Length: 65
Image 1 (tube, rainbow, N blue to C red):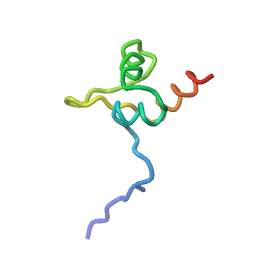
Image 2: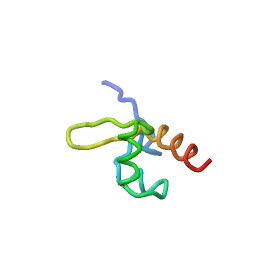
Image 3: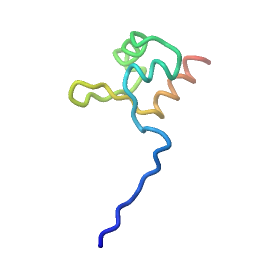
């Protein structure tokens, strides 16, 4: 019998553009501009743009400072 590792469902490691914008209180356009300016790390997976939650937090702290 095989055992499966179970990860806690507390937080997503990556979020989409719209979710990222909502989380830090900016528009999706602001997120897009930050990605284009390479101020925010993002990955394209198919048609989706995914942002690491840790990088989003760093970006939000930098912008609010």
